[in-house]
Image (cartoon, rainbow, N blue to C red; front, side, top):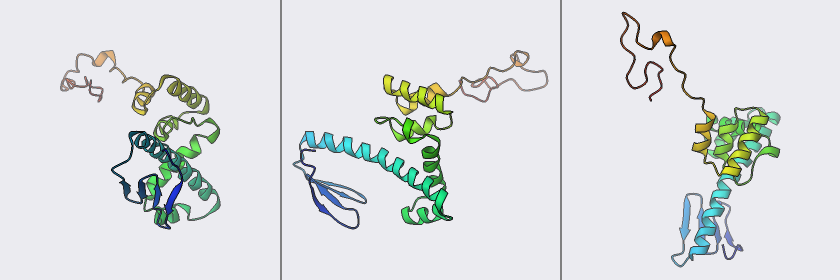
Length: 173
């Protein structure tokens, strides 16, 4: 945004910067906001969303190591379900800070979290280099559906014919 000086800040989390009042439930935007300031605001909010997930995940992982009721307390504080908090923390714990890639979304990192460190690095580098979206990366990470064994290709006597949509694999083609 043209001016990043904070004009107002309240204990409830309301911030006013350059014609935009950021509240806990949304933004109140001055009708005179320039297109440049609008673009800048969109980029910053997107960056804050990723930053927030990482920071919350790292805080939860820390709390899990240090405090007995970290997830319950965090759930009460944030209003998020404990399962949601576990998922956020899981990504932070499985994708170490030193291999996270700035400019890639938290969701993209979540997609590679189940993989080993070397695979994570490989896929993060590919995603960054090729501008992959989370959905594109997820498609590349999923193995192709298995083909049914040849002996079942024409059906089995006494059993119904395979589904025409999935050919007996359970995966719609």
